[in-house]
Length: 212
Image 1 (spheres, one colour):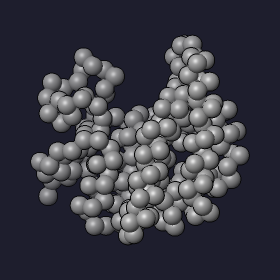
Image 2: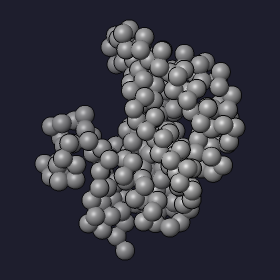
Image 3: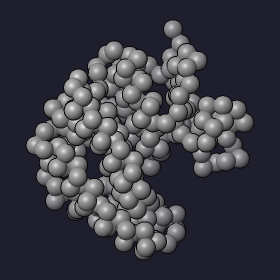
């Protein structure tokens, strides 16, 4: 039986989310390296997998798919082991809500705001864009409070069990917490700090840690 193929690079939070789902569901897969920041080295046929030239893309025995949310939901539903979506409509809606919050607000502000501006750019000798940081500082506590409120005392972002919501958000939080300022802010939300303590120690997270 052919292994599913995931196209992408280890640095991508979205590729990592897909990998986390595959690992948590104990699915063997092949990772085909695609670096979207190296435009001159993108395979000419990659557009057949993703017309917008982004990552990840996915291929399961000829069934091609792109967009992370579609990929992870497909994986969870096509492979029955270790389900990662709740059984009730309301609980599934919460999982999807967290994923949407991550894509719309957490990724642009916590990853591109804090991590890129405070960690990645300085490492590359680039100046911090103070305008972007100002926006990120306003948005970050709103994002974290929203996650905390939706947890509502439960151990995971989607309720009582690990779900796609946790695996979607965790790679973003990992980059966010590389900023000292971000780490101090995060610790003011004890339930999120407790969640991260559990999440970051999972074998899947350690196996997919981006290279420094």
